[in-house]
Image 1 (cartoon, rainbow, N blue to C red):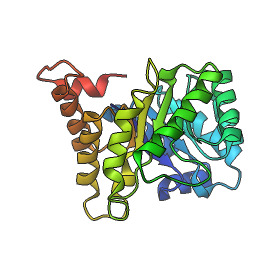
Image 2: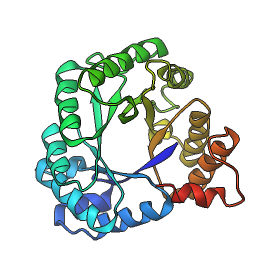
Image 3: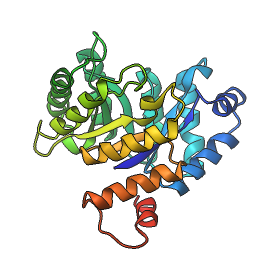
Amino acid sequence: MFIIGERINGMFKDIAQAIKDEDPRAVQEWARKQDISGARYLDINTGPASKDPVRTMRWLVEVTQEASDLPLALDSTNYDAIEAGLEVCKRPAMINSVPAEWPKMERVFTLAKKFNSSVIGLAMNEQGIPKDADTRVALAMELVACADSYGIPMEDLYIDPLVLPCNVGQDHGPEVMMTLRQIKLLADPSPRTVVGLSNISQGTKSRELINRVFAVMGVANGLDAAVADACDHELIESIATSRIIMNIDIYCDSYVDVYRKQK
């Protein structure tokens, strides 16, 4: 499991101010910090601070790439903004994200094919987030089928089963874990899996602890990636340790440092 650093997001006050002022310092500081801490991708989200998401996404991509060579995950429901960001990405990027809705899938997978991008697909449609694993898996299969029709390799498709906060959707937790396991049976090779990790703890008093435990459980159930706080060192240590226990990585005494350096 690897981390997609969540911090360059206009929902955070310092990034919102940076976008408003077009001051790259906060953006580039977080790019460097997440890179050093062990992120494999950097998530780029204009958030609500921008009046022109297309222009802002392009600017965020350009200034982030001045500070880090990590590939980017372009995070927006505005596909014009994502396309603008893809046009200036120096490395193949990740599109975050698309629901299992055919017009949107067609737009996103066309972009993915054109720009050689990975895609995060959401196990939801116009009716919202399903409660049970079976419906989530059925929607994941629609994403798999559409990706395949556009010639997108399964290893470039990441399915997000969609995590709800445990204080309001506690009964979704086991369904998400079951979905993670079943997604691996949808194709050969199988699509990958991803979650927005901080969603599980939203509105709770023990956010870091809940995030860390969920991440470890996710690794045990086949989770491949998470949009998360790459600067939470205990989270990184927990993930690295779970990968050793699950025999994903080879043990050495410096296995946490090795995990951080795996780019």
